[in-house]
Image (cartoon, rainbow, N blue to C red; front, side, top):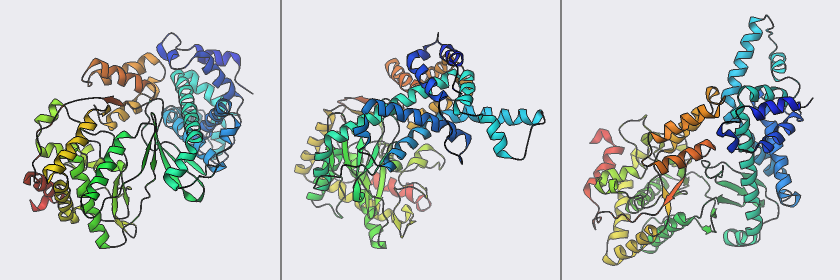
Length: 506
């Protein structure tokens, strides 16, 4: 039995006088509810949350097929199609879990109080879910009408983004094959995994695309200019004698998006390889410091054998009037590579050289992570070598300053607030108490942004993004300069590196 017209109209009309109707048109919301009402349960062995959100993924897939046609869809293998649907299901699960958990707990308490409890969990679950996904979803959306609109928004954004990637891949397939693999890639996409980064600009995220024979490429929904600049600098360092040589990744920049070489995580083959890994890490840190880069945290670094690779670096020359007043050590910390003295702090937890024992950023031998602090000398040696390579002669300094000038002349990412802070607001904004009324949800988001943002314009951009389940992403052009870096490595920086990695020895 599908949702009745009265049930659909009740959900659509609830809260309609608030700004929630700006998220999705009523017609679009009504179409989703009608389709969900006709869905059947498919997964037999899955939690209630997954069963319900699978219905949403099925509807999203039908919307994608309706939008792009069978030809583009047919270029993806069954595995790729399953990965795309799974990404949508998990996205819906994240925004639905708080409300469904509350309803599930309340239902079990109610059945127990009424003497209907049973030891057979499947019976209770069946009573809770009813006959079709639409039955429970109707009750959920009636109680939490904003959730229905967020579902509709999420499905639309997913559909539009996947369609965008499929179309761009179809257009760029010949040049992607030639640029990265030296030949035409197969027609069928073996796998496609979105969600490898935070969502920005309508749920867009970094996506892994795998072709036949394991050939892989990374799609980024931004220009890739910063990565091109970064890897060009590393290549320049290699050409000017930096040892051990740094690994660069190829970037194919397009208009508003880019393709990038996939970097495979791997272990080092020997202890000597680990030492070279950390010498290279020191080189990356020096280059990032001199380019005044920020956001070089653990999620953006991949340990490819004995080569650390910074695969996401879009916040170059992040210089403001405040930065110009900071000490060199403060600027070093701002890169994101180093922890501070508080292990539980965001700086320490997200740092590349912190105490984490998991992550693709860690150097390993035979799969076992090593401790970065044991290689402090190698890190300092690589840092000093890279500094001298970049600034050691007047000619090299002049060449580097031309790179800096090119970066400063471009619009680039600007970070006003840590991703974790935005993530906390997003998580709070999908709690049950806030999904009964858009005004209540909007009040929380607005209060969280206006109290911290440096300007009203920044706050409004943050509010608009978070309202639509995005993490805010800013680009701007600044011409601020920094005091001239010394020709030789400042001792305060090498001492700071040793101090943070070997606090017991300082």
